Amino acid sequence: MPDETTPLLSSIDDTIESCMTGPRMTHLLPSLLVAVAWVFDAQQTFISVFTDVEPTWHCKNPDDTACASSSSPCNLDRSSWGWDAPIDSSVVSEWDLKCSAPALISLPASAYFMGCLIGGLLLSTLADSILGRKRLLVISCLAMSMTGISAVLSPNIWIYASMRFVCGCARATVGTCAMVLCTEIVGKKWREVVSVFSFVCFTLGFLSLPLIAYLCRMMSWRFIYLWTSVPSLCYAILVHFFVQESPRWLLVRGRKDEAIQTLKRLAALSGNMVTSSFSKLQYFDEPSCETGALSTMKMLWDRKWATRRLTAIMTVGFGVGLVYYGMPLNVGNLGSNLYLSVTFNALAEFPSSLVTFLLVGKINRRSSLLALTTISGIFSLCCIANNEIIPAKVQMVLEVVSFFSTCTCFNIIMIYSIELFPTCVRNSALSLIRQALVLGGVLAPMLVVKGREKKFWSFGVFGLLICCCGLFTVCLPETRGRSICDTMEEEEYKEAESNQSRNGPSRY
Image 1 (cartoon, rainbow, N blue to C red):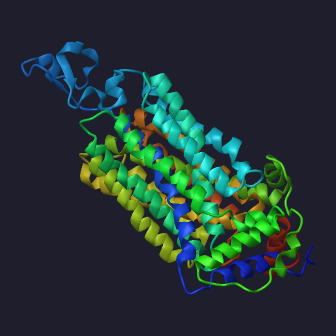
Image 2 (cartoon, rainbow, N blue to C red; image 1 turned 180 degrees about the horizontal axis):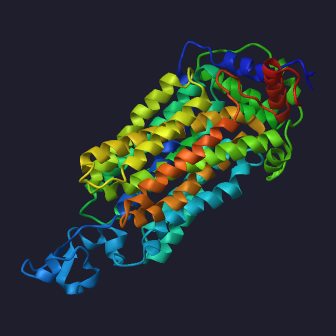
Image 3 (tube, rainbow, N blue to C red; image 1 turned 90 degrees about the vertical axis):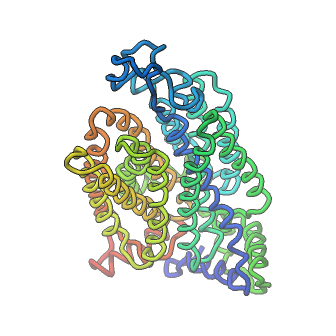
């Protein structure tokens, strides 16, 4: 093992960097392919905006004054009104859920997010301990695709909600595995680039949904699932054959020979016929982290600094997740065109990714998160106003600005989380943080349905919670410009060194 004055991370970073300095850029292709997983992640996350939408209705007899004067068909005779779209265009119309309890209407979306929450808690440690990043990503994509296809066969709301729950469990680790893997198979120079590309892929997946849904608007909602799940199945096969495992993970697991072979393959992709020795990697002849599916959770729990960081960033993530997942579901409450509203929300993620790309190397993580959560909350609260006070079009602009701020928060949180935790627990920590984001998504559909009666229950609660949760950012250390670590001891060494330079003697 190296002595305490030898930075363990530099040897890995230097070696990886030396393998990525060839004349070609093709070494980025595996990482970019991994990032594409976020396309399918986004599609499954927001697909219920269109499959579970409440269709508009009309009176069958224009002379029926009772029907014409009613704002809801629930008190009318079923034969006096009909749906504007085909009855199987939405689960609400197909299974006659229009007048059901809000909890039942929001059940599939809430079940999906609950599955994401439970799946993340149960499966997140497998990428750090047993399976690795690549294998868990492939398994998760396959399972997500198959359950998405199975949802097509659902005969009722209960089976459908069950399929969404299982799909959420499978999807829970897709984004985190993809994010961690794509950043660990490139050099430091490209880490932020591929991170932002992941966000762009998520936006593309989100943006593809209005197009797919519009093309399928006069067909069954089941076709939307087919158009999103089948490509995801093909993608999982591509990743299995064309992507390498993370060399960092192989090294901290003591699998030095496999890590060296992976680095050589990555070097060959960049046109770099590496001839230097890998002697600096001799420190990893033995596993640098504990083994076992729950070992990473124990490592996070046993260290107060790790628990403190995790609790703070998860709290921030909960508020951000509530708005991030809730706003697209809530745009229908503004009374504007659903396809255009969702498209505007999806387009808001493009400038968000661009802003993240341009500024992530220049802005402090803490202050930017605090400012953006405050902006998002204030603009969300402004959407409470009646249309007479603030016109619907202006409210749409306010909602998009709020969503844009939240998207940027989401991006910064993901990058920030990678910097806060070392390699041996990074995937587990990032998964837990995403579960906090998803927990907000579990609550969001119920607030959205409640917000159809009074907008405070959606926009008001969204704004208040993201502002309050954002305050916990002050409990986190600043990580801008820091190299990422690989072991808990190295993270403690760097933190102690940083504290000593600012405040004198270290607390470690």
